[in-house]
Length: 381
Ligand SMILES: Cc1ncc(COP(=O)(O)O)c(C=O)c1O
Image (tube, rainbow, N blue to C red; front, top):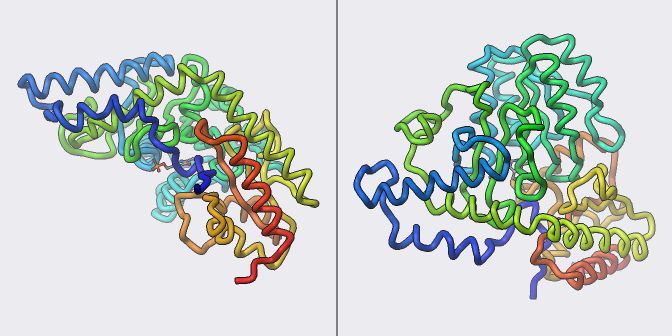
């Protein structure tokens, strides 16, 4: 049996979510924009999914716009907010997901914005004093900082950053793809203007997500077309994706406390066992810290060794699916831009293990055993 420890890349679909989606794949196939009964039934289901998400995040249903996932939502908010508010300076960090990093570098290359990078501390956390001084120097800025880093798991104090952006009247976008469905977001407390989610990160279907756009900070549409999504995102809706997304979020909130306890338990088990078995082991970013990082992600830093290059390949051969960095570029030979930014000189190996409710404590024990054997006994391939 293979062991799946790459849940930051994507999670398996919850069978309860699949059951909720099934009728919309078979019987309820109408186009939600059609005004006849087939269409109206599906429209009503989409609107109740939107309402449910709004209730869970403590925002209005109208502030939720469905998209094809996290990447589209990040692109839409960044491009459209910059355009709508005539933003000239964007403050971001070098460890954002490519959905943000590449979007901003394209805009900077086109001469549309000036990019300012916030300083990170030794563990990769945003230095809030530096953020404040950048905000002071740059009027009408847009701040784009992720709530949790998908590679090293570092958590941002999103409430503090929201309050700072509010003080300096900056637009605040946060990529919350790794935290929606894993933490509670109270959007009456968090002063974010635009944030993003992808259902497949919390046991929902792939290819569906949403953006939250605060109602008093509207932006122009990014995808032009029909009047779907209140004219904010043209195109026939991914109906069963949206139904699955809302169901997955509902389950996530229903089970949040026990889910956190259980998954955090898996992570701390792995930290302990790795410390016992591999001398010199450490953890990239702040992922070894259970409070300041995602409970779903552990980025293991193994001491320099010749077999480090083959680590992931060998783990895979031994039946363990893990990742070296961002899953969105898995298969690509290039190293992680996040680890490159945090540890430019390091020759240590990196394995990102990420956990879900479907992992068992035994999965952790097997993964630690395999990693320690691979590390001690170089693979003879
Ligand atoms: C932090 C973060 N942002 C954005 C994305 C992109 O989301 P999607 O795959 O839904 O486009 C991911 C996916 O790995 C992610 O981890």
